[in-house]
Length: 355
Ligand SMILES: [Mn+2]
Image (cartoon, rainbow, N blue to C red; front, side, top):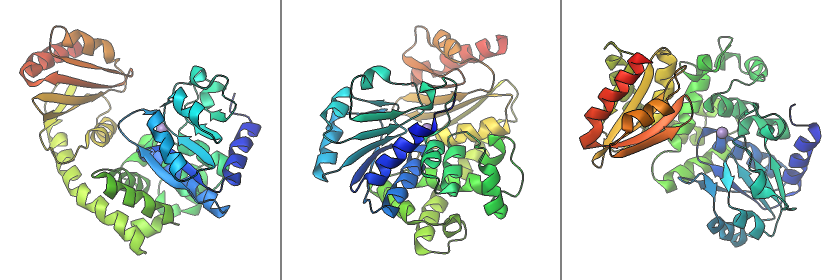
C-alpha cells in the first residue's frame, strides 16, 4: 500500500504552519533537492527556513539540537537521513517532521508524541521511492527539482511525463528507465550540477545550497540566464573537467577483457567515486564496476554490479588481509591496505570469474 493521503496532508500542514523551520538534510542530490522543495514551500507560506546539511554521519546526532535552539526554530525537519538519535528527537522542544525512505526506525521514534515519521516503507516494505519524490507529493510544487532529485537517487518517477510536457527540450526522448535520464540528458546534467556543487569545502557547498534555494527555473542553470544560475554552472564546469578526465580513463580501461572493470586513481583533490561508478554501470551493465582511490597507504573502493551479489565475495577475498568492506547486495564499499591490494584483487577477480 502507498502512504495514505492523510499522512501526506499531515506533513503538508506541519510545513505550512512553520515560521522558522530548520532542515537537517542529507548532503547528496536527493537530500538537497528535498530540502529546496520544502524550503521554498515554507517560504511561500511565510516560513523562513534554515539548511543544515548533515555530512559524514548517517545519523542526526544530539549535538545538532543546539542548532535548532540557536535560531529558535518552531519546526525541525529531517530529510533523507536514515537515522536520528533518540536523544535528539526526545530533546527537541518543538515538533519534528522526519521524511525518509531507508530502513524504518520504529524503535527510535516509539512513544515520541512530537515526532511525525513519514517513511513509505511503513506501508509497503518494497517502497523505497526517494525523499524528493515524497517532498513533491506533499507540497505539489517544484516539479523539475523533484524530477532531478529522484533521478539523482536512481528512480524514474511517474511525473516524468508531466515534466516532459512542461519542459520538452529537457526530456527530448521518452525515458523508460532511470538509466536513460541519468546520463547524456539535460536531466542528467542537472543531477551533476547539484552533485558537483555539493563537493568541496563546507562553506562553498553551503553557498551553493543557498543559491539553489533562489533558483526558480532549470534554465537559469542550463542556459545561465541569471547570475545565480551562472554561479552554480561555473562550479559545475570547474569540476566537470576533472570528472570527464577520469571518466575517459575509466572507459579506456574497459577495453581490457574480464568481468571486472577496474579503475584506480590517485587524484586526491576531489573524489568522484560514486558518480563514476553509477555512470560506468550504465555504460557497461555486464561488468562488475570496481572504482578505487589510492590514499594514505590504502585503497578505498566502491564496487557495483547489476546482477552479482558482492558482499560475500568481498568478505571471502579479504580473509586474513588488512581491510574491511560491505554494503548492499549490488553496491559495496571497501578499504584495504596498499600492501594487501594485489593479493586482494587477484582473489576477488578469481571469485568473480568462478561465480
Ligand atoms: Mn535518498
